[in-house]
Image (cartoon, rainbow, N blue to C red; front, side, top):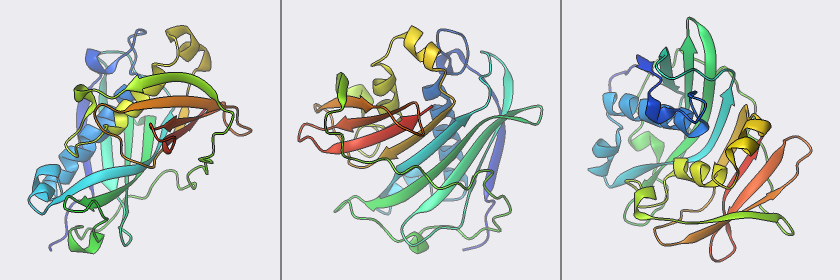
Length: 243
C-alpha cells in the first residue's frame, strides 16, 4: 500500500448542537468533534467505516483521554487536526486537537481496535492499516489511568436504559452516549461546580438496545471522582475518572 497522509486538518465552527447551556462546547460536543474528524480522516485513507464494512470489520474505541484547556463559545471558528500513530498488533492510537490562533483548546488521545463482525474477535492491524510517514507525535504520551473495575460499596448515582437512538453502526451503545448518560446523572449546577477539565474513559464490554446500566461512583486520590457503569449482570462495561 502506498504511503498515506497520517494527519487531517480542517476549519470548523462551534455549532449550537455542540454546545451546552452556557453556549460553550460541551464535553460530549468535544468527543463528537473528535469522532467526526476521525471518521473523515479514516475514510480519506481507506479505513473508514463503510470501507471496512466490506471486509466484515468495524472500529471500536477502548480508551479515550480528553483534556480541556479552554471551552470555545458557540459560532467560534476553530481548527481541528487528527492524526494516527504506527499500529501495534491489534490496536492503534489516534490523537486529536482543537485549536484557535495556534492555542490548543482541547486534546484527545485514544486507542482503537478492529473487530470481525462474524465473531467479534480482534482483527490484525497489519492486514488493513495504512503505511504512513507518521510525522506527528502525540503531545501527551502519559499512560492511561489504571481504574479498578471493582466497585463494591460504590454509591449509585443513576440508571440508564439504552434506547434505539443510542445505537451506532457497530450495533452497540455508542461510546459517546456513555458519557452523555453518565453526565445526565448530575445537574447543570453540579457539572458547573465540578468544572471538569480532564477525563479518562475506558470501554470494557459492549452494551445493547434495551439493556439498563447502573452508574456508580467512588472518590479517588488522584481524581475528583471515579465512575463505573455496570450492566444487568453486574459486570463493569465502562469506567471513567475525571477532575
